Structures are given as C-alpha cells and as structure tokens.
Image 1 (cartoon, rainbow, N blue to C red):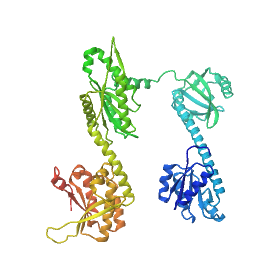
Image 2: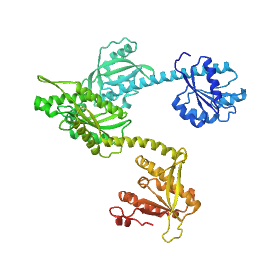
Image 3: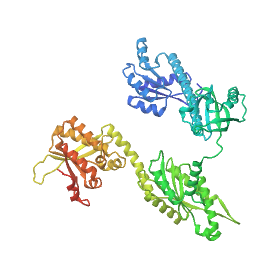
Length: 609
C-alpha cells in the first residue's frame, strides 16, 4: 500500500505477544499498520469509536468469546472486517468462526497467508467504504435537489411519458389543485386541447436534447374554473433515476405574504441602524431563550462606541447619527445568521451570540474591536475613527428571565469604558458560571458512571434517645465511591447533581437501598430524605410500589423527610406525595420545621407522622 499514514488496526488479545508478531509480519509485507492492543472486551466499544480502525483481529486460541466480540462490532461498526487468529487452523473451527461473523481465520505460523488475507480484507473494506461514500453523496445530492425543487418559488412539475410524477408546492398553489389531483395524471389534462400538439412536441424535443431555452406559451386550466395563458420553460431532469422533463412557470412577482412579512420586519427595525428596536429585540430574546441552544454556548454582549459625546460635539448631533449608522453597519457585517442584535437604549447595542465555545465568543469580540478601530468614517468633510467597548456575559442555560444576565453585560461594558475603552470586559458572574459549568461537567460524568456501576453506599447513623434507651432509629446518609474505592462526601457531588437534574436518580438509589436494608435488618425507623426533583417526579410513586413488592420491606419502617422550604415552594406536589405515601403505609416528616415563612399553615395542610 502507498498510504503515508499508518493503517489503524485493533488487536483484541489477552497478551501483547501476538500484537507484536502481527505488527512485524504486516510491516515486512509493506503494510504501514498501527496496531492497538486491547486486552479486555469491555474496552472494545470505546476503541472502535475512538480509533475508527480498518481491521479488527481477535486472538483467542480457545474461541470462547467470539460471539460477544461480534455483537459489539455489529452494534458499533458492522462494516469493519473481523479476522480470528488461532494457534491451529482446523476446517471445522473455521466454519464455526465464520458462521459467527468472522471474515476469515488465520494463524501466526503461516505468514504468507496472514499477509494475503489482511491485504484482501483491507482492500475490500476500502472499496466498500468508497462505494458507500459515493452512494451517500449521490443520495444527498438528489435529496438536496428535490428539496430545492420543492421550496422553489417557481412552479415546477416533473413529467415522465406524459404523466406528472412530481409537482412542488408552488405548482399546486398556482393551479389550485391538491396533490392527488395532479400527480399521477396526464399532463395534458392541465392544459387546453388547442395547445396539446405544441406541448407534446416540446416534451419530445426536450427529452432528445433538442429543446432550446425559449419559452412555450400554453393555455392552462385552473381549479377555479378559469383558463389563462402561461409561459412554460422546459428543462431535462431526472426522477427516481429515470429522465424526465421539468415544466417550470417562473415566479414573476413576489407574493403578498412575503411583502407583508418584509414590511412587518421593517417596522420592527431602527431606521438608522437597521438593528431591531428595543421592544422587538426583547421579544425576540424571550422567544429564542425559550428553547435550548442546539450546540455550543450563548452569550450576551453589550457594545458601545467610546466617547460618543465627543463625537457629537465634533461633528454635530445630526451628523453623529451617520456615524452611528456606519458603526451599526460594521456590526451587522460581522453577525452570524443565528445572532440577534438590537438597540438597547441610546447608543448601546445588545447582542445574543451563539458560538461553539467561549473562545469563539472572545475571538469574535476581538475581531469587532480591531475592525472598528481600523475603520475610517467619513462625515461630510471630516473623517474620524472610533473605538468601542464590549461587555460579555454567559447566558445561563436554565435562566427563566434574561434580566440579570443583560444587567451583567451592561455592567461589564461600563467597566470596560472606565478602563479606557477599546477592550472587552467579561462579567464576574459569567466567569463564575463558566467555572461552575466546567466543574459540573466533570462531576456529572462521575455521578452517572457511579450510578451505572453501583458505586454508592448507605451510611446508617444511629439516632440517640434523650431517655437513654436505643430507639433503633437511623438517619440515612449517602456516600459515593470513586474509582479507587474512596468515599466522596455528599457536599462534593450533590450540588452538581442538583444543578443537572440527577438528584431524583440518586434519591431512587437511596430509597431502593433503604428498602433492602429495612427488609433485612428490620430497624425501628429509617429517615430518608427526598429532594424537590423527586417531589415533582410523577413516576416516583409507581416506581416505589414496584420496589416495595420486590424487596418485601414494611413501608412503616421508612420515614421520608422533606425539607420545609421545598414543601413550601411546592405545596400541591407536597400534599399529593405525602398523602399517597401515607396511604401506602410510609411515614413522613418535615425537615428543619419552623425555619419557613408559615410553618403552622404547612403543617396543617397534611397529616404528618
């Protein structure tokens, strides 16, 4: 092979020796391979995703684990060839391995055959990959073309052997018929008989490649019963792999709805700058922020020209509006399609930026600073240059109102101007939010892994009696174990779990483990805390019914604790859950009772044990 880059291979083997033998054998044959040794089956899935290998070799002289290897391969990368390497080659075993999903079976002892099989499979894999890529490109191209035809403002119908096989929305709208009345019907039914001969000749000429670009005038029938003269353009096309003729009625006028939309958009924008006015800008922000960002991050940016009062004194109030227009034009030229920009008040501009990451936002701001500082503005006989200040803050993903974030961006912009201008200032809160998000990303991964691997532990802390006897009651605490088996205290991982909607998962683990403990040890009472996420979880009660049935624990041995603040902020859910738990035999209690705004009213709303 002539590739300069090494060919990635995965060798699944319990020892490294076969890997080195395979690597040296293939390199002697001129294959620039890079063999990655995977000693454990549980690492195979990640390796297939990360390495994107061209070949998978399974070395197991007993052949006992081939089936799970094939299952993982088929689930993640079914097109990758699988070769089994055995110590001895027997026809019976070869048939068995190949029936399970192996492409071939080789031994390290027969070097020539190993090289030949590898060369064959690598070539076949690349041919198959190239073919699939070519077919995908063809499918995508056809799909894009079909999408263009369907969305085109021109009315387009596709005709094969005199039958309409496809018509876009504009064609249906033009003639007023529904799709069923057009598609599958003779094209001549749409036109007056006096024009049939000319149309038939034009269709035949177009199929033969003898039709020029001139138009054909025909009389068409419309759904409202009228007959009108229209001009058709004919082009050769393709539908379902077969040639067809496209009949096109060009759109000569913009439709009234489009004009109304453009007029409405013009009314929403500032006449001088072309940016959204304050009211429409804030409305657009609320709408945009109601849906999560598809990918990346969102930031608010407030931009102000530096020392604009001096500009007004220099060029005059009226001419300063021209300066602001030029300033806004430079901003608009740097906006991405998904960005929102509008006048916030005075000369301040508010922007909602959606970028891949924080560094992209920083780079965009630096580009704006440089672009504006270098630009020379002509106002009458005068020329001047501007600088600007930018305040940036991150938009929290769960923010119900953008007020606080916009205020942070405004304050950051003021701070940038106070420092001399021509710079970017980031909100302190934005820095903290960014750090929290990075912190959470790490903990979320650890928490989810610990839940899947059952690396949580209960700690039953005995509750002492004031009278001295043992009440056999315990306060249930939870600990998470790290990969080394060391305990992680709740204060380290629970805040991140709460911010990322993982508390109800942890609650379920704790409740399930507490029920098992109650069934085995039969304590007098276990006090188990429930979070607000569980209180609002409509599926919790059904889940706990299944757990009680599976564990056969006595519900009365558990007392669920709900913090008074949580109960006060979710009174309806609190009443419902507590009533249902009481009905099932569980006990309930308010944690830190008396710390809320109206504890007596809350206590009187439901019976508590």
